[in-house]
Amino acid sequence: NIEYRYQETETLFLDIFDSVGRKILMKQYSNVSEIRETIDVTGMAQGIYYLRLRSNQQQLLRQIVIY
Image: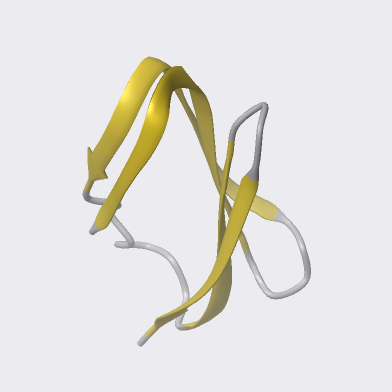
């Protein structure tokens, strides 16, 4: 589950990359200040992934593990 609140209404981008940098998922949220999303990881191999949430102002990067 992903929950994120931003101070301003803006277009946000959510990307998930595998451990070698391949983009696995990309989503765009237009004119939002909050994201509540459940990402379906069915079919994704076990391992380490990186979640990036970015806007025009900033970028947030988190490591996630699927097992």
